[in-house]
Image (tube, rainbow, N blue to C red):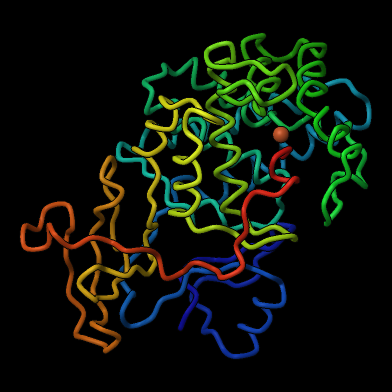
Length: 360
Ligand SMILES: [Fe+2]
């Protein structure tokens, strides 16, 4: 097996460069670093390429810029115009790349190349929010404001006690209450800094509100919750669930989608959930799936609005390897009665949302 996509480490250093041949020692290192997965090439998958929706370079630069803004907030409690401008410029670049790509379908693996959780999570939430905004037909100006709101949604965490923020075990009632302050603290900070359009503020405040009124900080429900808040909440939870965390394994894309669907109308706005289901691939390109006719296949291509019917490459039948062949589950009439039963990449110890996710 050779590495098909360069793998970056916590400090954006190149851990494994594309083209490197994997040996036992390298695989052990990857495991030890708790890297959930990487792109590989072998004879069966050689030409299957998961094209990232955002270039690695732009994503890394955005994460770096965001780090600056967050650390600045922590040190001086005054948002520096220049550091925010850097993030704003990167965000505009991200929106350009997304708008250029007419068939944007979120393949979860795209977003999982780096391990710097706090900042990459915020950037992922912004990317997912923009794609949701595009699906809801937002204009360019609104997309920009949504993205800024999403990328800064957790800035209030800079004012939360670090020991609570990084606690690997279950939070006490008191710690949980303290953690829950982050959305209103972030809102106050964004509002008082005067550097962000005021239409961005409610998204930061509302990202933990729930559609049925059981969220925080204000217990708003339905349309009382800002639209940005309702969008960021879905993006936030989806990215948290599909991320590897110290206290649990990552859920697969299809599991996380079921979670979002299951909480439509209670936690999430059903209209936003509907948009979400149209633009997220439950079986990302490169994942292995089990078909209802006994075949095992690799996903080769996803189609917007038809996430459950990708093009797949069959590699085995009833556990026995076969000469690979492809089926387009969206158009091939001979296979309309064949469905995907599930992903074969699901980790065994993936758990439900924890306290940390609920407040993250
Ligand atoms: Fe949060």
